[in-house]
Image (cartoon, rainbow, N blue to C red; front, top):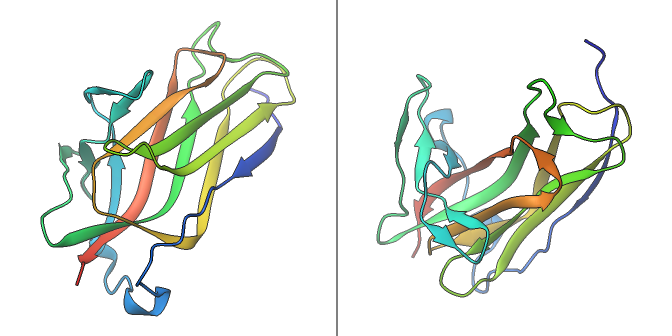
Length: 163
């Protein structure tokens, strides 16, 4: 099947967290890495759903919540559409997401990709160049654009003690 070329128009709204420098936190072991998702999460901010699960190293899904005294350092977001018959994204259409906090609605990151090929599967990625320290529940809105069959998202990051 012919791969689609995509034009990525990614943007990340970076809100610097006061009192924390990038040098204060570091991923020490690969096992500290977290891939968080919304798995049948509660509704939030209109079309969003709460980020309530994580993908474990063995591929299983487990509950996820930021523990008290910790923060989740968001380092990036990956997203993709399916390629079922008649699904995906039409030529010229876009897919994307908005990641924000549940309590205040603060936008942490957003991104989109435009399909420059025939209808089908698309992917995109947003790498956050400035660390985003999150201590509250997250909401992911994957309804940006006109996608048949939905968009899947993976929020990458790690936990650290929030002193």
